[in-house]
Image: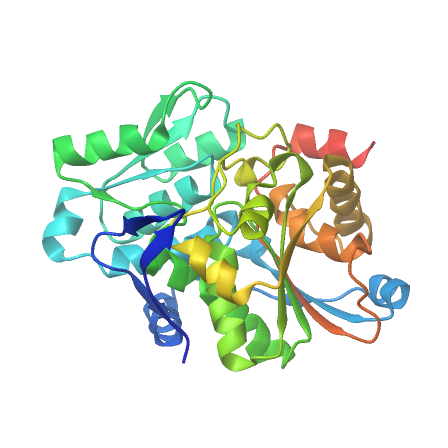
Length: 338
């Protein structure tokens, strides 16, 4: 069993995480029970054309069909189900560019919990509208000049709200890991598992699930070329922060990975590769033309990493997490027409 106790040493100084976090495979199994009947068991699809071109067997776990349009609903639901009655009565606050925002808003509404979501003013309009549509109160901020973490923390302190971060939380990580769990249950043992990475919640949870089930699987993270903080962090052996990435993959516009997610990635992720925005548009077009599905740019990261040829996948059995499908229709049309 893979267990992480986090009281870590970075750069010569002790980094203490309050309520020392533990994430293990049993947490993912519990999360699967918690969200059973609430989250969708999304389909696993394949493409004959892609398999032939790569000489591989590729299985796409399509979280674009998840409730709320993305995998984030898994972690949000698991986190909210584990709140105490008093915490549920007080409400929750979260921060997100869109998918986690929608996930928390929806999960909260299903549990009768009031939600406040801190979102960037330049978030896609479709994600803002959906978050409000689920009944959440939206607080806008300027992501270039303000800290969403600080705003959420202040709201939590002022109103007694429980903060549900988008990735750096044990219950969120465990919930995200159920996507890989379901993929492997359906597709069977994998040689490779490709997962997108922003803050690292999906990647770390998926890595725990996959490596617990099949220790030999190679886990690969994929992030935007213009926002490769996770890649730099693994190479440096410490968390590296970058400026706000300028990429169409808005769900991966994080400036640093999490204090909880990073050591998990260090232990279980083989490498992190990057893809360009042009490659993301190409992958969006492939999904639309060949597989008849709508996938947002961030949702295409892992698949684009597979298609890029940066890793030789000949004769391999490959799992891919397609993380979401929340994309503005006008932008989608523009991107796939390039």
